[in-house]
Length: 236
Ligand code: MN
Image 1 (tube, rainbow, N blue to C red):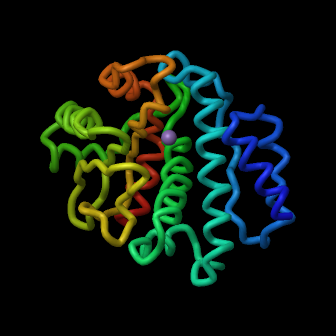
Image 2: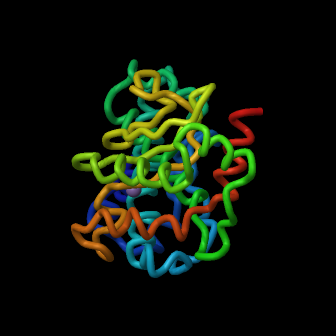
């Protein structure tokens, strides 16, 4: 089983074809509690032209699958993590090696990210409750969007832009690498409401070095229905 896992990791590193990823050889090598890559909630080309199909296939099938594979490997090598939920692992992540941090964060962040997008015209609008809170904390929806885009644009290197519920207000934040607001050592803790991936792998094939064009175009594929649900859950 170990050799199967290594072969799988090698195929990933070499950019193996997508059908290799579907073989899921780790299923028999690991416990039933192993983390899994959920299906994309839409077709790979559903978010075009903002996110092209090739970017989506590589991002979901190779990058996200890689985080899942490597998280399962890290958990299998760390008895203290076995049986813990992803949220529980993130909440104590500073006590664990970088491989746990990067891959647990990567799996959580991307699972959220796919759900927070929808084909153009299908994402709905901000709910009355979320609109009212955005207006209270940022002044207007446009002012929030400006702050969120600035957080994404100013993140040097790789990372994420966030809208989080801190417990008494909404806040915009950004994190490096695959860090997120659930981590015990996050500078801005909170419940994620909106998240955007600003790693170059999220946009480079389509937008090249123009991260700003990706950030401004991204609003048209934001799934407000999911953001509304996360806000309702966080403020319940
Ligand atoms: Mn990514």
